[in-house]
Length: 265
Ligand code: 0L1
Ligand code: MG
Image (cartoon, rainbow, N blue to C red; front, side, top):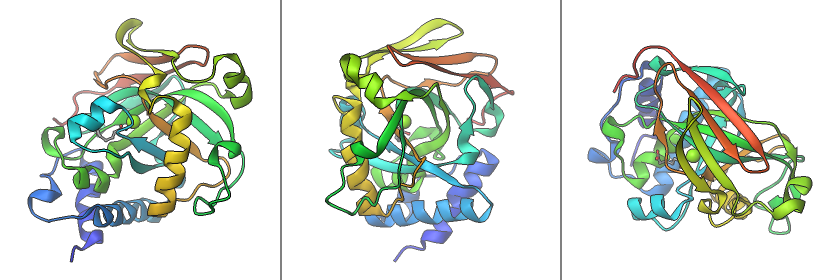
């Protein structure tokens, strides 16, 4: 039997110190359900420090990342107000272990949803969509982990930026959300390019996946919750003194300035 609270505390220390830890799975055999117990215990620690949950995020939504990890399903994590950075705001790289940034699409819920209710379609509760940046920062040495490790580590969630929200109906009326060009630029120079298609074929497909995972693992979906659908390109390492901008065709851009010295690894 694993002690979820104890394992969560080790990960939480790594978040707060910026110092990496060895993978939990090297010492402890964790099932996926046990890994989600550790994730939940970590979120409870954050809540006890006063952080408020602002939403959820999906990981492994691109076929490339899923194949790289040898997994066939997405994973879900939790984001809090302490992870939110205003659009154009600053992140201090020195607080991270080895942070990377990826361009995403975000949704916002207009009403509270019970994900366990089979009569509910989460897509009907989404009112807005926005371009976004997610900073991922594995708390494990060398950014290496097993599936259970990364789930326990709250799917590497570290920070996020939401660009301008627009009505989901308006955004979808034009061309839908699939196959929109995405660029991740570094100081205005293209770093990565891709398409929203990399997010499960269409970011809208993230919504039933979030509903299913939230129901299975007990994540709440209140009104106003932010749903990060997944990455549209590979992630780039954060570098001090640079600005990262994610642009999603038709949705606009979200950006983040990186300050501070060096990350820890
Ligand atoms: O948001 C993500 O897709 C990250 C999922 C966890 C895997 C990673 O840290 O690359
Ligand atoms: Mg992500």
